[in-house]
Length: 123
Image 1 (cartoon, rainbow, N blue to C red):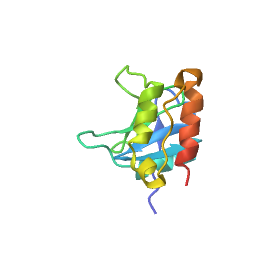
Image 2 (image 1 turned 60 degrees about the vertical axis):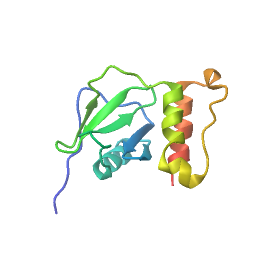
Image 3 (image 1 turned 180 degrees about the vertical axis):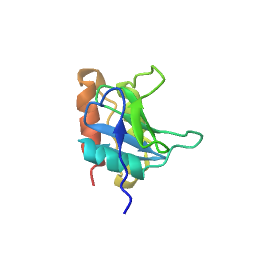
Image 4 (image 1 turned 135 degrees about the horizontal axis):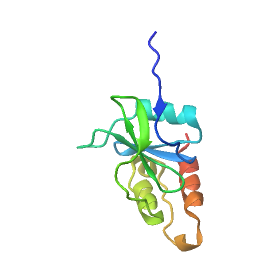
């Protein structure tokens, strides 16, 4: 049986994280969940990596070719609004028929929003 070795380069993400697989989102609260989500995910159209957003808003890239996760090469940080819009447009939100409110996001911490969405993504 082949065993895949999941690698993390440079630094680890801050949990929980959101994994973007096509139009579907997954959440991971620890390394084993993250590895499973990344390995079973597919890149979005016109991309060759899978994006992972940690609870600080930093973007990480998972390379399926190398089974490796590293900080993204762009210096873009996700905003509260962009995370919420990502979730609200996802297949997950459509299937669950629920969205995350954009009201009073200024009073919520970024990590709290990511954690709330990750909990909504749990099966």
